[in-house]
Image (tube, rainbow, N blue to C red; front, top):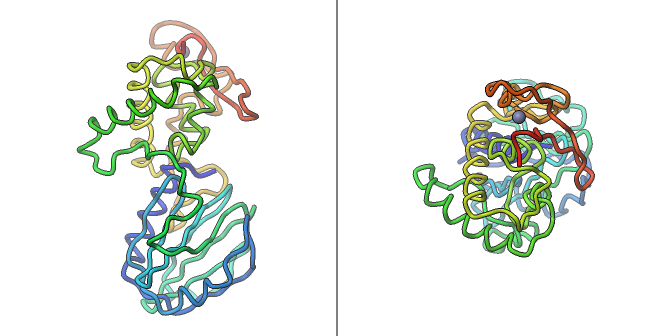
Length: 287
Ligand SMILES: [Zn+2]
């Protein structure tokens, strides 16, 4: 499932290619994904201009000049692909929605497993899926990273005070912090040397601060590497990301821990199950 870095890269691709373009027509190839695609979509989008793309958590928001915003979620296997119109239009397999602009571009929403979401809302109102979402892990301005890290640590320290759940599961809760999924949580816990089996309330302020730093480091590295491409994830131009080459623990059960090897220790990465999902960790490095 695409996580924050992958969604951020797709958003940047959309923003760079489609901002300012005017929608000429909409082809709808089915009526529902995870939820129904709103009936009003064609009316709301027709002849509107795209003024911006914003990411919030794992959602992409396409803001229009007519008071509406379209919300996209890529679900398990969704892709948003942009193509110039000079290629002859051909509906791709699992293509559910196509927008065509006057500037002669297609935007295609393709989703084989159909867990994605396409919805519409009034820009001045918050979409119901965004109302109770936790803060973003990354500062909106990279220069503010350190200040934001401190603010976020204060916030999480308070939030964790009565949380008896495993830290791993708490970090996946989008109401606590937005955008994180299994891959980047496993990697960030490894980098900050915190066991996924620690109870959230047992973390000291210093540990939380170090965890936030690790989360930010991992996310920024992943964005730089174009995200992690597993199965379906691709950029808007169809290219893949390469951050999976830099994973330290995710999917590496039974392989030697690289941090341990540097210290002349020999230990293998373990896999455990938490809330029905795999956790990958080193039980020597992570305490
Ligand atoms: Zn280790």
